[in-house]
Amino acid sequence: MRATLASFAAAATLVAAHVTAAAQGVKWDMPTAYPAGNFHTVNILMFAKDVERATGGKLTITVHDNGSLFKANEIKRAVQSGQAQIGEVIISNFSNENPLFGVDSIPFLATSYADARKLWNASRPAIEAALDKQGLKVLYAVPWPPQGIFSAKPIGSVADLKGAKWRAYNPNTSRIAQLIGAQSVTIQAAELTQALATGAVNAFMTSAATGYDSKVWEQVKYFYDVAAWLPKNVVFVSKRAFDALDEPTKQAVLKAAADAEVRGWRESEEKTAWYLDQLRKNGMTVDKGSPQLRSELRAIGETMIQEWSQQAGAQGAAILKAYRP
Image (tube, rainbow, N blue to C red):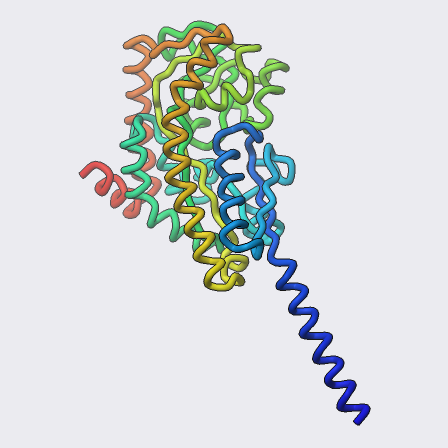
């Protein structure tokens, strides 16, 4: 009898432990590289809130912004290794791993939101498959506003950038530095303000959004809105963490992700003009760049499209054919 009672007690303790764990729910950490006020981060916070609400608190996502948990170039590995369950990266940062990841940062391949959407639709299956092999499941992607050139001095042609201390944030921006004769310095967004203040960089290509976040007008005064490309941030989750969820929770995550993608694309496009206005209001000169500058940059873009096509092989050719048949 005592043995039987002991068995019942042990079973009851085990059941109580499972009930307590269920009541506590699942908690995910989500590192991001951008500040709390950035539209990507705001969108992610809404996504996290949507997930918590839809699951009744069964899944909560804690967002760690501005590289506070992991730096930009560490986030992908952190999710792959289980140090975090979900993360956001600018996917082109990892094109050295796979050239497919850099298709959205090839200069002048896709220069509008409509073209960026078309390119994402053409490349998404291949990118999802590549990340799947690395243990990651894509949830959604949102583009940055079009990339332009920030400079401490006026620029009339590519020759004016020769010798500049050029901030690069991915392999393609490093390649641009080589082609224009600039000195490439790898600096992620969270470190840009300090790099400008110390004189480590004095020219770079990025969006007006990053320029605004970093208050670049304190060091540089010119922005050339050449709309070279619209790189995307991709939000992905560890497949192991996702597969551990029950089916209703999985569906809630996927629904919140789909909503975040639609909302993020809309917000990115709507805020583009606002970011440009903020640069102007803070004393920056903003224009489209001279015809010579734009023509020379497009020639660089054609070179890089051909280089990427060779690197990406048959998959790259298929993406380009689907994008611009």
